[in-house]
Length: 230
Image 1 (spheres, helix red, strand yellow):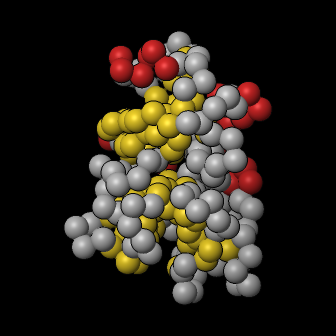
Image 2 (cartoon, one colour):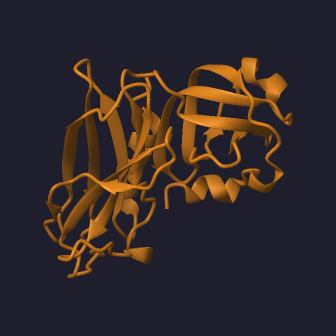
């Protein structure tokens, strides 16, 4: 399903990180139910021996972007979700899907009392602020681009001029291997999970060919994939 969920392994890794990390961590997931209602969920894990701090940080705001339209992020939370300093706590934002057959990217950010973003910097490790979803599930591609084979995974190079994101795909599906290293564009439908040191992974449900064309200037690097969740 297209709803973004942290994979079980990633969820386990996130819990481990919460217990041993030297700063806070969080990851965002998004899902769409049978009534076309989108839920965006996240939990901030605080590490008590080394509190995140930032007294100016009072809450969380949620932003949404349509990847189909490639528009700007729009704030969709009516007011910030209040933060409890020093606490591990979870939140869920819900809204009716603005449209169907569209991939939406949600971003959850820490904010101050004026709703300006608070840069947690080194006080936020393995933080993954983004989640992706479409309604109905699998009704729109999660990303679109060409593929690069790096041995243990395929990297997705988003089509030029698009708002789609880079992901890695591992293990590598046999059906995708012939497209690696070519200029054949693919629309990739599936789910993704972020929040571990490996970056954001894409699990492909199905795909089709699209006229993406060569995108040498946008070839994904491993650093770029990992930067997606920072």
